[in-house]
Length: 260
View 1 (cartoon, one colour):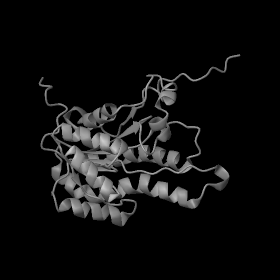
View 2 (cartoon, helix red, strand yellow):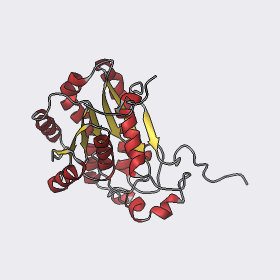
View 3 (cartoon, one colour):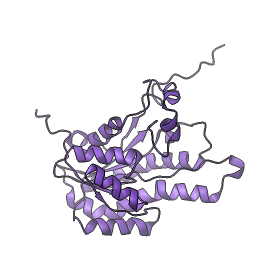
View 4 (cartoon, helix red, strand yellow):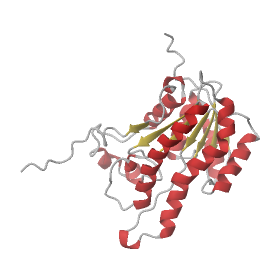
């Protein structure tokens, strides 16, 4: 058994949405380090271009919050390559507001970007994924979900929590269809990683760490490692699964006792 190349991505082409910062950037940098040709996309062109230059990727700035935007990104990628080995659907949004005042705009913005866009971007890139895929070397789609889709948190982020739960199930449904084309769909449910979306972990990491069984928030390498595993040969037999990367918060936290 030769395990030396199990986690390498040499010769593979990857696209990461929301790749200019946070979890998307962690994954993109990890893929570059493992030898992949990486395209990063983000809504803000200046940040997208800066990140691409810093990590050795190619920038494809694009807003994917609409179906038209998803198709435009697919067209832009097609001008660079006719095959796509790895798609990471990471772009996402959150909205927090009291139940009594929670607006339709906050619902629709989050649901559109977090649930609808991963589906329609994958649909738009389906021909390129099929072109790269084979039973011996499947193409990969990795949806970035969240532990907030696996358990209730104390924040009033109703559409965010619902969207991530929906994306976890959508991952399974997409996996059941796309495995027929040798495209394996999985997801990663991150816990506390420092980012613009998770300002608590970013700004109060020590305090957040006290609630995590592993005793710390996630590091860049933790997220990159999970994504590399799923994207590389090492993860070729994983289909439809959601890997929780959270230091044990969901599955190894005992919580409080109700025994009197």
